[in-house]
Image (cartoon, rainbow, N blue to C red):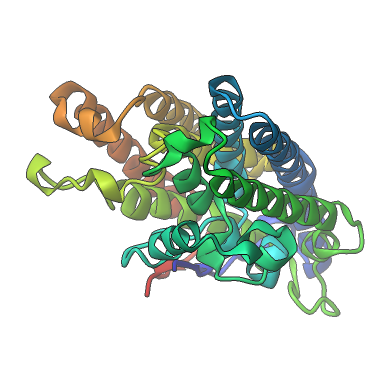
Length: 359
């Protein structure tokens, strides 16, 4: 699985004030805006959508029908969109108890997760239909990837009938597990004396963030790392340098046709976080065009990703549609240059890092 690693950023105190004290105060303002304006609303939204999804799965199991399956599909897509925005904050409460991997085990390069889900369905493992017991099983069996296979994978057509109740029961347990994790993370971020309090109040007695530099480094790392992840892992994991190198079944959420929705959610989250933090306001007056350019490019990236709909293999087979993916890659590369090089240079940051590591 991928590991998010903070970039090595050396943030001068002069950026946020002339003294360590003023630096911490200014950094606290930036971080508090990020928490209140993006992080808390994003995870609250995920909690709400996950709850709707869990109810839709319960309704499908109680009364199998095409209408209820359509509602479950809609709930799944809405939850994917909410998660794709929130997941850019891949530290803090979401990292506790392996929640990040349990929520989404991806990429599944060796199909380990797929095989475990298929084995549970084939063997009708009764413990996998109990949310409490499922939470203690393999991370690959209990998140969005597992639920996607239940709802869209081979055999999903049985969900509209009553002959194979196990598949729906397993899916309902996954949905409930997702809701529980979302609720726990939502509650954790809302605690004023929890992780949010530590991030927004750096200082010498803070075990995680000793000064404003470290707190803001965490924030800047989100923009740099997530853009790299979206482009180099999520997109280039299936988009080849040339059409013959494309791997449509390596695309995230390819079964549910939510690949574009997910990519859009990632960039939408980055934009919302950047705007909420008002980090661009710390730029010198003659360099604030960068903040507006970042915003515009993120909006364009979101629009491009949202236009990618339907089966990803058909998108890749159509030169015009495939061109949208290449355009999306160019946008993310431009953004990486703007944020990872030019913005950090304006702040006097040194960005030398390897932000993603895979097994």
